[in-house]
Image 1 (cartoon, rainbow, N blue to C red):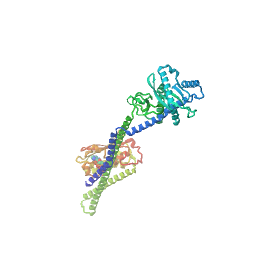
Image 2: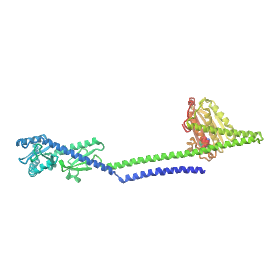
Image 3: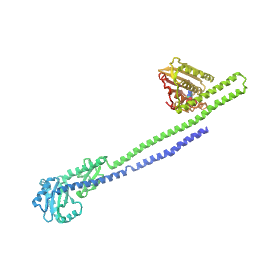
Image 4: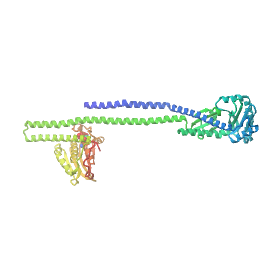
Amino acid sequence: MKSKRTKFWSGNNRFRLMVLAVVLPAASLIYVNFHHLKSIKRNKHLEGAIHRDFQQMLAISEKKINQKAYTMTEEARDLFPSPDTDTESEKRRKLDVILSKSPWLAHVFLFDIERDFLFRSQPQQMRDGDFREEHEHLAKMFAGWLGFDGKMFVEQIHKKNQPVMCQSFQVKRAGGDAYMTSAFFVLPQLPKDRVVLGGVSFEPNYLQQTFFPEVLEELIARKLTEEGGNQLAMVVYPTDYAGEHGDKRLAASAGWREGKPEVSRNLDDAFRGLALGIKFQGTSVEALGRAWVQRSFLILGVLSVLLVGGLVLTYRSVSKEVALARLKSDFVSNVSHELRTPLALIRLYAETLELGRIKTQEKVEEYYRIISKESERLTALINNLLDFSRIEAGRKEYDFRETDIAELVRNTLDAYRYQIEQQGFAFEQSIDSSLPAVRVDREAIARALVNLLDNALKYSADDKFLGVKVYGANGVLKLEVVDRGIGITRREQAKIFEKFYRTGDPLVHNTRGSGLGLSLVRHVTHAHGGKVEVESTPGKGSKFTLSLPLAAATQQPTNYKASGATAS
Ligand code: ADP
């Protein structure tokens, strides 16, 4: 009892150790992560990274937009008249040609400080009053301004590497105020000290309806092919409208719909006065950050479930190991006890006989019987042990032969009858002698039957009854062993066929046994292609039924190799 308790505690200690070593850190990890995720609500790192990415994209976009405007300007510049060789009218004609070739320009102009200022506008637009006014106004303003600042302007352009400088103005178009930018440049063929400036003004309607929408789509398409992922949307709006008037946009990509840009950048150079904005289509960076946190929660949840599942599995496997270790150690003490008792009896009776002091022949015979019975018991136990070790090692072989099963059962019972009667059991047998011969391993089947009979005798208390029945039903040979003994609870019925297992009944405790018998019975029946079942009610008795297929049993292979006592 004492040793059991120690074992019990050592098993428990192992669990405790497991709880301390694995469950606690795992639980703390889960808790800390949950807490952490709960506290961040949305992922600021992710948002920061996206914002940086957006800023970079806007910087690149601005460069591309400027480049496009400069290229268009340079194309127009290449067609400009020469201030020195062309006559006045040729200059005018050439400027008009530029206008007709470039419908996206509203005005072109040529300023020569030594000569004059030519300012030409799209002829068909001149029919519009506002446009005429714009023409007059700009012509006058540019003439005055360049006359005053022209020299400095030229010097500035020469100093910078960029040979184009832009100025933006607000002008009037049919829809109201409109954004116009004008590009100023020097003519490449002239010496640096000539104060001559050419210029073009981009038509506001063209910028709004064609230039920006196209360039935005191009930029987005480029970014998409680079990365994939969430679709982007971009917008261009006048800087004075940012903030609460954010929707006064000049142009936007198709997916913009509405809302404020996630990140924006004021344009310099070609389109001063405008800003570029970017966001995701249909979602915000904040929502993405939140989604990330939610996904992390989900992953953490799944991982936690897996972790808990793993722990439960480990716990169960450790419990099984502990239980098996306990069963094994019980087994060793049971077997030692089982070996010692018959040996002690044999020795006692043999020594008594040797002394020759027993006078009556009856007593002598009785002693011989006891010696023989105890050695039989020893043989049975050793046979079980040998079978078990062969099965465990996978070396158990069966010798299948044509057998009259009724006769085999009858012979086994006859050899056992004395024991049955001597222990005061009422015995009933019903054996169908008309059964066909089957191929079985006689010794193995006989030993299985003896194990069942032995159990019936061992585990019966007051109502001593043993019944054996052999019959055929639906191509199956049935061998039943019935008792009215202590019975087995439903929970334990599933376990009694496992090696070493013995039930917790006090009678079982006080009865000799190794816990191997039923596991051998099961192995033998499986090897014959059959099965063993138990029906039992605690306190009322048990019925063990071996079922062997009549047809299949006749075709069993002769070299069945076992792979373990609990193999199926
Ligand atoms: P044992 O050597 O302990 O008899 P077995 O493998 O033959 O080993 O049986 C396993 C356990 O099943 C027994 O210890 C006993 O608790 C239970 N058992 C087996 N047969 C019977 C029966 N006829 N009635 C009640 N309990 C039984």
